[in-house]
Picture 1 (spheres, rainbow, N blue to C red):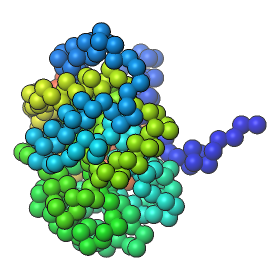
Picture 2: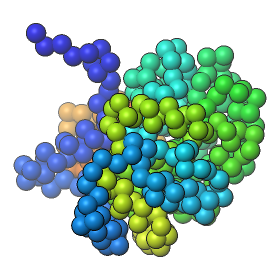
Picture 3: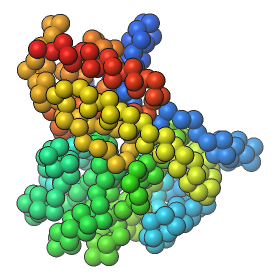
Picture 4: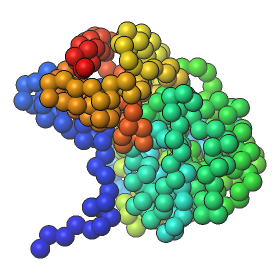
Length: 397
């Protein structure tokens, strides 16, 4: 008899990965699908990083690594925090994992007990809520629409804190909106959190280097909550290393030790070769990140200009990452070609079938009135995809 556990039965399938898979299936059938659903840079990993991996193989970095990561990589991460963020960590506060996603679930499993609440501002990254539930916590979602630039205010946060609140998680720059929290906004949020010593802040900063407006601001800079902040980061986005699967945390020592203990029973240390490549990436500075970010900014400007030509879409201006998250409310209730648009997911499916453009509905991000488009692709494909979307949307009546 087949029996799947309740925890897996109740877990949603990742909407972004599901749409990417659907896109690949259609392409394999010879259908000309343009994929705007994928959350990864379209650049190859820089040469100096790949060379470091080859050297690591030749030097026989092929044995089990320490569970928390090689000392040399953890030291590189410590130096990165000091150099780029003006934050002081020690090596024993760093744990290297198999991607930032792994880092996040490690933290949730280490700090949550049944009934503990985690505040999650929406729009949120698709996996946050299911990760909280997997760790037997209770997600408390705060709705933040386009009218508030998709950002949570300090007042909203305080209104949702209860005696059961154990943590808050958010990303800046944000997936899916591309929005950044300013230093002033973070300061006001930190001032609220400071009043509630039981709350852990999980700050997802994986898109840190893809920033179009200036210096990255981390909530960990505020001393009043510094010892309760866990920074999530990694090399995937900024260094075009998604397939290398290296993420890391900078955390209070007690959380880092708990995560290391947990990881020792689940996965042990992350891939040795990928660790040495990541060490080279962090130690070489950010020139390659800056070059990629300049290209992303140019694409951002292009996609915003094109989307503004489409009637009925509400557009905000992303300040980082490589996504745009238009509000599609005016199309809800409209129909064409046997489709009726009820939310972002149904519009995404309509665009896939009608326009052969893959994007992701906002339902899984906690914002069913929106649609996520990634502009991590060429300018030619951006122009063609928005042209197709414009035609398909014009047919909805």
